[in-house]
Image (cartoon, rainbow, N blue to C red; front, top):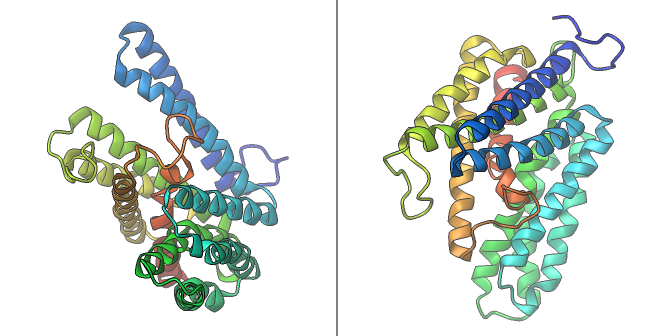
Length: 317
């Protein structure tokens, strides 16, 4: 595959996916603008608002995937920070949890440093092994046992949702075995982000157009079987045709794209349940049309780690 612009220091695959993403956004923006002029409706207005948000998120993720890796790590680390802050803002934490809360924030630079160094083992075990012991111990040290089991469950889980999953995006860029002659970590990063976001969009579109049978009526009434199935099938097809970003075979592409769609739906459903428990519509209001950071990366928080380890198993091992 040849570069689109030879003077730009990006490999051909990354240039092509950037061109594809921008083309899709331009086409979508044009279609919804014309549609709104011909037949205005609430659905069209919502799609226009979401398209504007997709433009913003597109530039953020493309910037993270194409700049110097150190900037990518720093950007993703701040994303984890803002995600944790959204969660902790909504939580009714005990006063005695404050010191442990600081410890949770301090785990962000440690986890991303392991990703930056490509220290695979320490990266994998720091949060699910060490922090799952250290956090409960610090809660015990505070001397307040009232509702302590709630804090012991919530705080470690917040690290998994806000740090552990997302930090796999950074590991993709730095892991040596995923950056050799036939594998590009940045290309894999773009593939994962593109397919995950495509899955969110396709499940939303199919649900709006054809959705009749609710899949999780007590958790997220807007999610339907039609949206889920249409999203999974279309995402799998999109992933297959975006395979030039990966070293995967056709069967492996279908498998991984299918898994991304399934795990993306799981992440969306998990955060929907969390929001229902909190009694809020969105985790925040940072991104117009999409709520907060966690509302937007809920799927990425559950697709990133399975994607990394499936790639590792299929390509590296």
